[in-house]
Image (cartoon, rainbow, N blue to C red; front, side):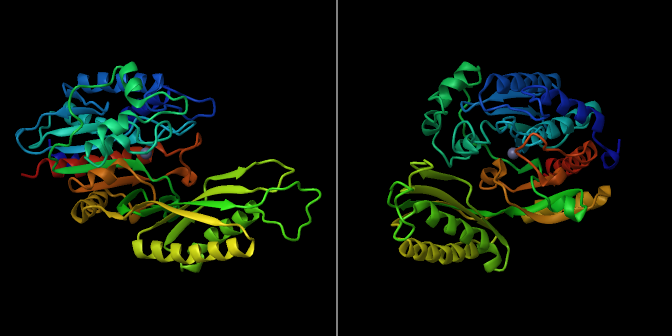
Length: 413
Ligand SMILES: [Zn+2]
């Protein structure tokens, strides 16, 4: 058959996603499939069963990453890979991650039933612990595979109950023997829900992010003076929480002040002693700044840092600032991104050249080989929540774009 007319089976993709959504299903329609939990094991078992049915080779590495490999005509050529993650946030959604593993599975099913061979091998990947919600940090095992993180350091990550990553990997039977070490790749694609509102707002079906925003993390520690709230007059107080409150608003106003093209968030705060009748004397909070423009991110931080110091001085609350983590913005391969836009057009789908505000396993793959992502709309722009949703029609459209993007890469010699 002419591969130009080839399309995935949308109903089968829907059924596959629905079967997966039963594993760890939550009452409000989401899933809870934390990394290396019993639910993660069940979902992995099902995925492995499905790739075996397609006569694919199953490779499990020492980080529990699962690869399904479909032979090409020439197996000496570096493969085309596509993957994402099976794990979820606590009370997460039915699409984040899993769509990027079941999507390429549907691609291989389509190729299999149509007896279509590709020049290069095709590999589907499930990366262990992308979410980082049970074991920090996020993208742990794609990071080890890419050589950016140490395996033994990853093994020693513990969850909130003190359970070790490696022990849990062994417990669920997914500590493989293959070294978690990258092999040459011709191209890497990750199919994912957008997790933001842009596609829906613009009424576009396919998003082709030109890359992932820079990510700057800061930790702020404030000292105040604790005292009984009743007898202590307002005048002369050193209230660390009030200082923090002013700072949070400065962070929130920052993108506007900088003329847009960035986001800034305080998402975490600890207040001590956190008692209603004691003036807070210690506060810790985090600042997250993201932009396509690394310089803008740093300039805005310098500006808000000055505000923080002024507020701290005015309120008599000594401040300590840690610049915790900075990851530069990561542009995807221009040729692959353009390829996704072209394929979308050929298939008759509207598309948007955009950016990704969230981190993905593709960030690490992007350091190794040409990489790109395919986004489909998130209803209401919501994700990491139980109401996370994407229409079945959009899931199918994105899979068709993935199919043709992968076919093109896999037939390049
Ligand atoms: Zn994800």
